Image 1 (tube, rainbow, N blue to C red):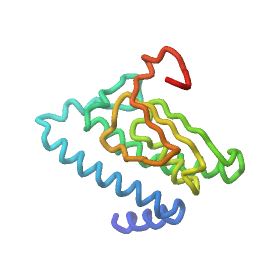
Image 2: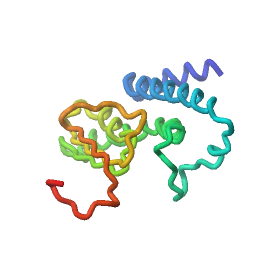
Image 3: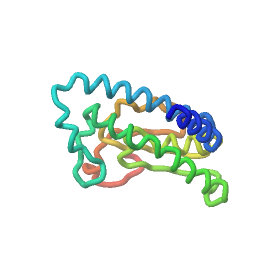
Image 4: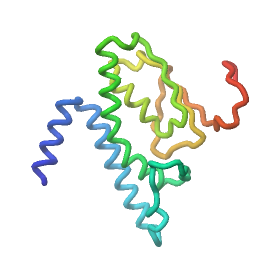
Length: 162
């Protein structure tokens, strides 16, 4: 089992580069440890038993444990989408600049996918919209990133000035 972990680590670093793998590993490590600490305070895990992310039932993403489970499940997909961005960019299917708008951006995983795929964060412009501020959201301070904490169900018009 230990050999497999080292083999997988070496393969992943080779295929996808050290930065993205290190980012995912460190993020999962932190979230997992926080999750274990979080559920230790629960009297019962019954609430988590039926938690699924593959149906139309919306969960209360304001709860830290729901966000933790979501991220532990989907953070590894960052590699897959990173590779899709790289493929599009390498085959010239994307112009030199890309505008990304994410509705329900959550933890901004799609921002990080693009940030790792492009050689410069200046190569794309990102707008994230979510009605919840996520616990593990990073401070993405650069001029091509904007986040709006809004509920799009309450929008009445799309206007550049609103």
